[in-house]
Length: 341
Image 1: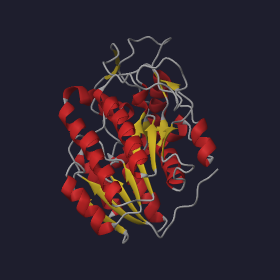
Image 2: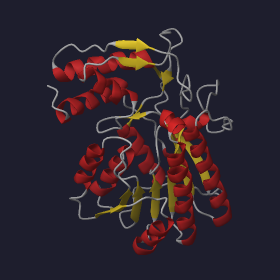
Image 3: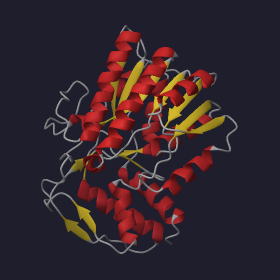
Image 4: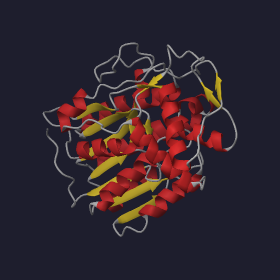
C-alpha cells in the first residue's frame, strides 16, 4: 500500500463536478477541508434539475469555487489553470452513454477527445502533481475472458463511447511519457447510487415503473445466459479515487490504469429483482416491474466483470457494498426526492 491521506494544502480541480461521480468526489474532498475548483457545462443530456440539486449542495462550502464552462473550450481551460493553479486534476467531464454515442457522435469527439486533449495540454504547461481521469469498462469491448484485467487486449471497442475512452488512455500515456505528467486512468464498472444518472438502467427502470410503463430488458429473455454487470456503489468508487489521488505513479512509469469495479458481477435479472425489493421496502407496498424482453443492443456487451487485484495491491482497497445495501440507499433517496410514498 502506497497511498497517503488527502493533502489539505493542495488545490483540487474536478471537471464534471455537477455530474454523479464528480459531485460525490467534490463533497468528500470539501468535507475534509480541501480547496475544490469545480467545472461543468451543465448540459441537458439528462435532467438538469438533478445537476443543479447536486451543485446546490456544494455551493455553501466556502472552499468550493464553481465555473460553468466546457472543457472543449481550450482558452477557458488555460485561463482556469493559470488562475487557480490546481495541484491535482480529476477529469470526470465526459459525454457518457454507450447507446447515445451511436445517435450523437459529434458531442463525444468534442467532449471526450478534444476536451481531454485540452486538459492534457493544460497539465503540460501548468505541471500538476497528479492527473486522474475517467476511462470506462467499455474499453474491454466484447472480451470473452473474465474477469477483465488491466493487461487485457483492449483494441476492439464496440461503441464510439468506448473508442473515445480508449483514446483517452492512449493520449494520457503519450503525454505522460513525453512531458512526465503523473497520470492515472480509472476504468469504472457500472456505477450506481442515490442522485445517480437517470440514463442508467436502474434509474430508468424506476422512472418507468412510477410512470406506469413497462421496462425493456435487452437479454432476449434468456435467463440462463443473462447479461452480467459489475455494479459498483458510488461510495466505493469515491474511496477508490480518493486513495489513488494520494498514490501518483512512481518508479519511472508516469501512467497507469486501474479497474474500479465490484469484482462480483450480478445477473441483470437478479439486480432487477433486488431493485424491486428495495423499492417495495422504501414505499411500503409491493412493487413489480412490467417487463418486455428484447435483443441485445448494438454496443452493449454481454458481461462486465472487473479484476480489482491491481487496485488492491496499489492502495489496499476493494469495493465492499452489496447490491442489496446499495440499491436500498438508492430506492430510499428516489422515493423521498420524487415524493413517491
